[in-house]
Length: 204
Image 1 (spheres, rainbow, N blue to C red):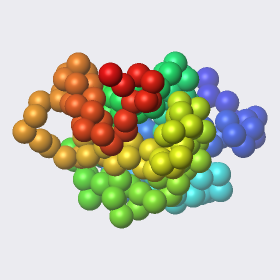
Image 2: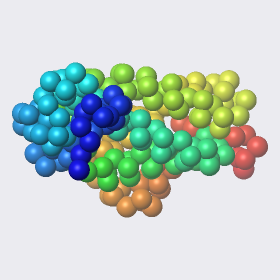
Image 3: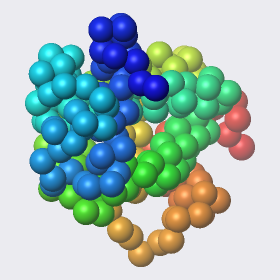
Image 4: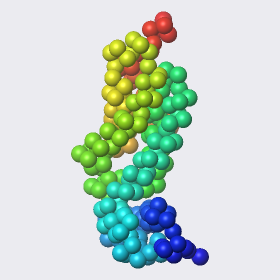
């Protein structure tokens, strides 16, 4: 039996609303008016939904931000397990692309409602890039040698990663990168051109 709104904390109410929104979007897509459906699925009144999250656009934005937070939480150990910038960047891109390709809600949006989802990765991407940079730059900086830090800004590495990941999940290509091994080889090949050089003491 569902708890009543008055028995829940504001955080729990917000999470219930976002859980309901995610389920509704997977079922119906982004193009449907869902506020009433989300309210019903969450077992909360529409005024309560407005109070704790907002209108439909604000619900979508809050859900997107929650998913980004989850993603960064999962990505952190991937970078912490890396020891070099070139391999760390490759690991980051491969993990992120795989995560996005398996993400049911994102894939449904890209397939059925690209006009809603694509702006988050293009014209509305700056806040996402800024947030990712704040979160990931220290992790990339840890992987960089003194020589690399002298010529490469860790924030630039974050943006390279974002642009690579975005291109893989929104743009088709002639090289098949659907398999993780093929994707890793593709990214490693790109980086081997000299975009992210290996540390000097590891070059032959």
